[in-house]
Image (cartoon, rainbow, N blue to C red; front, side, top):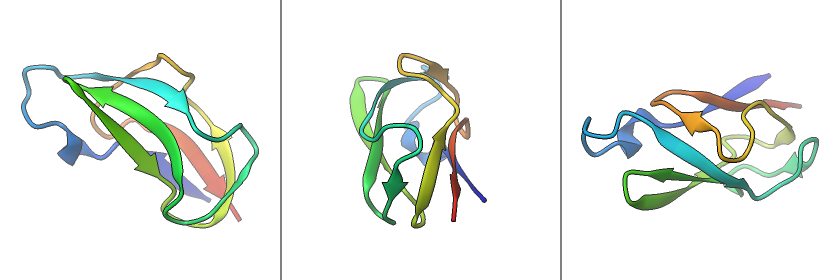
Length: 79
């Protein structure tokens, strides 16, 4: 099992210490391929696409419109 977390490098500054998970691009339980877009997060004024790090089946942990911090767990992948 692999964790999918929000990359801390997406925060350009510490003015806004949190972001928002805007939407999921795949449903819970879907099979995803490495590099495939799975979610969109808003950090400061920018939208960022989160991609799957590995092939697997996704289990969503954070819902749409959830507040996310740097390094927050949003989903897991199982083989």
